[in-house]
Structure formats: structure tokens, C-alpha cells
Length: 93
Figure: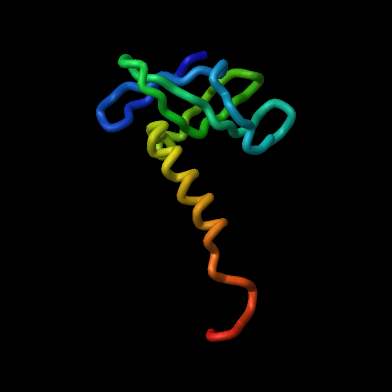
């Protein structure tokens, strides 16, 4: 099943065939997933959705972001992990 959501005035379609990652399994039938979506121009988006019985049943609209935004967020998290000044000590606190 394909679902469409509005993202900044653009209709983005998501399909269970484009699930890239399972975030957590709620029970034996349901799980939260990361899914890719596309607009009419072929631009790629990423969102968190709900799958039930191997069918995409929900897209959490506040999680939709363009692939550029998703990549920038991942790069920032990686930078934070690699440049964390907190060495676990309490010196200077």
C-alpha cells in the first residue's frame, strides 16, 4: 500500500517496498520503520512510518525530511560523536 503526505506543499508518496530499516518491533505484526518516499519530480525523502502485517499503514508526518536534511543530520551526529569534549571526568565542572 502506498501512502502520500504533504511536506512543505509537496505531495510525497511512500511505499512499503522502500523500507530501509526497522527501528523497533512492537509485536509480531507491527513495527516502526524508516521508509523512503518520492515526489512527482523524483526527489527523495525519508520518514518514520508504521508497518502492520507487512503493509505500510502510517507515515509520521512530523518525521518527513528531504534526503539532504537527513544526510546533514547524520553528518552532524557523527561529528558530535567524534568531537565530544566530555571525557567523563568531573574536572572543571
